[in-house]
Image (cartoon, rainbow, N blue to C red; front, side, top):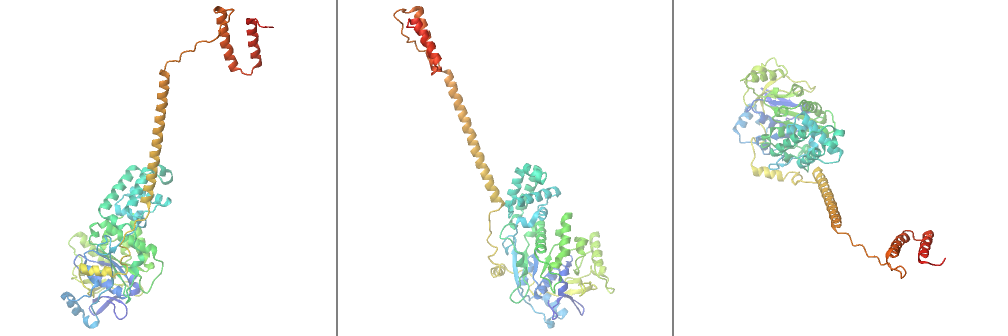
Amino acid sequence: MKDNNNQAYIAQAGEKSLHILPQMINRHGLIAGATGTGKTVTLQNMAETFSQLGIPVFMTDIKGDLSGVSRAGGGSSKVAERLAELGLESAGFRYQDFPVCFWDVYGKQGHPFRTTVSQMGPLLLSRLMGLNDTQSGVLSLIFRIADDNGLLLIDMKDLREMIAYVGEFRSQFTASYGNISTATIGSIQRMLLQLEEQGGDRFFGEPAFRIGELLQRDYSGKGMLNILTADKLMQSPRIYSTLLLWLLSELFEELPEVGDLPSPKLVFFFDEAHLLFNEAPKALLEKIEQVVRLIRSKGVGVYFVSQNPIDLPDTVLGQLGNRVQHALRAFTPRDQKAVKTAAQTFSINPALNVEKVITELGVGEALVSFLDAKGRPNPVERALILPPQGQIGAITDSERAQIIRSSPVYGKYDKEIDRESAYEVLRGQSEQRRREADAEQRRKEWEKQQKELDKQQREAARRQPPAPRPRSTTRRTAQGGGGFLGDMLGEVAKQTSRSVTRNIGNQVGRQIVRGLLGGILGGRK
């Protein structure tokens, strides 16, 4: 609830109202507490208050309860009791609705919410797929090869085709990119298949979500409450947490440096924050810490919502200046450790035994500490959280559909686009290689057939009998008749014929022939 001084009025400690100063909202925060202690109502109250200050908000709706913020509240006896207890009815409290934009990865209960494989990047995609360090390194190489060859990785079929391409021609990439084993390629392909079976493929495609959509206000100046439907998404916790981390990273990468503003550009609520840090590799934890530490200079405040403060690494927990701690239960040694850790993170209030009070808090009651104007934590107070001004609980399906249809982004992301990318290019190259291979195979078959035909012709020629020699037609003379002279004349005629044929134009040859014939036949000298 916004008070008259344009401050975020969040809780009431006796006669003392507890506010978050607008310029301190981007110093991040924590909402913690056991299940059923009122974390969701606190989140809704803070989101509404920030919206009234003109600050857009992003939050996930895991149970469907937050959709009610789009309708004015009222009609709840518990809310009425709290208003009377705090004396808010006479202090200007009024029920009201807030501008809402619904988003949904599956495109059923909100506008489709997608990104591209390239925008997700190999680090987050490795976490999404549960890859080990070796597999993650090979996936990074695959992204590098795609970039170097101008291949766009937009959706899952692009990535699947790219992995198969690198696996098929891995020997060609070894010299430039390092060793890529067949076993690792096979493991990545199996993990990718599992991700698709979990519905992860629905998150990748175009048109991709644009960060600027989160920074809108309505006609009255209220900040837009962007609600990501996450009931089905929570069935795949790794997809849920990686998606939110990607969105946080995109905000960090795309928004310009603005320093400390009078109020932030956006507040980002990260519900079920413990999922973000479960089994996260060191490189990813370092990235999260960097984003949380530096993103406030981009004008973004991040508020983690979790059951126990110990769910968050100390490096992240130390960045969260605004704290709302609901009740914790100390049934187990781990619970007792969580109580002690939570108590030690608050600025000391001598009048309050924090470690004892944490286990005694009722529903809607919390230990609260916000930053003062100089960025120092105020002493912790035991306080009652203000009730939301919007409806508590889910709206109907028809009401949701009406809000979606009247949204300024309606129709902008609904129709999926499938432009030419790595899948189409690599499939085209594969088809070209197949055609060339078919042509080469046909050429080789033709040459083989020609060789076989030539062989058959030679064999047939070899088996044919030799042609008979022609009988001599040399004319015998009257003086010799047959006998020796006839035979000699025949032989001389044959020899002379062959010699004349070989040496046509040779004058010496012709003289020898004439001289020999003239002598034998008695010609004139």
